[in-house]
Length: 378
Image: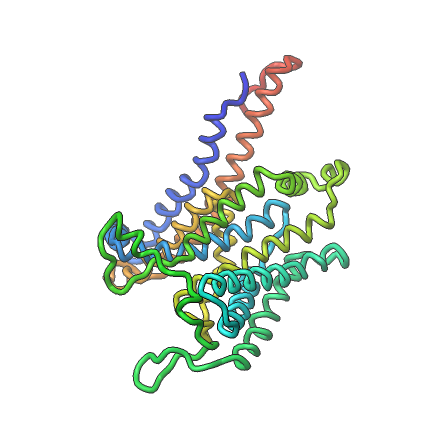
């Protein structure tokens, strides 16, 4: 009997579900040991997440995490580990914000210009690591880690001082320092009107980021590119067996550089959510999204739909950490524990599922060929 599609889907879905359930169980044990009530803690988290304003916060947080996850997944598809997403998106956001404020273009064209600049900077910075790999044999993990340090501690720190201008006034004479503010017409409009058409008015000054649309387009583009194009086939083939792909005519070096360039281009869009929120590049931007994107890609199994679920889970945990400390139900560090356990459990569960799938495929193939008896259960 052929290996059924239903069983394959079941094995695929079982891994993340098991990982999530295991993380909840382990977190409950930690909460009990620390003297907290897990039912109350998780109840506070779910109650907080059910509010419309919290849902907006979760979607706003999930948007850059999803883009970061896709950026990492592009490299993973070819067994490349782009660990430099953090440096790529920070450098891209800084240059895009500065040049976006400098040019004099109509609103829509200014928005397009900012996005194109961000993607170009991210692609160039990541592509440099790809070039180092194919010309000097430098592992992309080492090169992207080094490029991260150069970008964050060197280039970005220097350019922020060179390009800094007075930001928005916070209170009294205090101001938020950053690059020159981008005109309102150059920022992607929020999606509150669309959301409120289906729900109610969003309160507390919350705004659903317009970058959510860009994230959706990135996900669709990623799916089409990887699964519906010749380039995507070559990318997947090179990741599965680079030697066989090269024998089949796939240019190995060009694919490495192309994958890193494409990964960096997507990474360049990660920081655009914050730029659209504050209107300029702040002196202390949000960091660490690239590293969380690695976890998102791993949990989502590099699949566009899986990355969506993973990004929402991590965003939910990030947003919920604050309410735990506010209600006193538990320490907010429990969220960090949950995130770590989810990643660990997902890696183990996916490996178990992969081995089970390979055993079933081998059994099905043996039965179909009729050359050997069906394998006995191990």
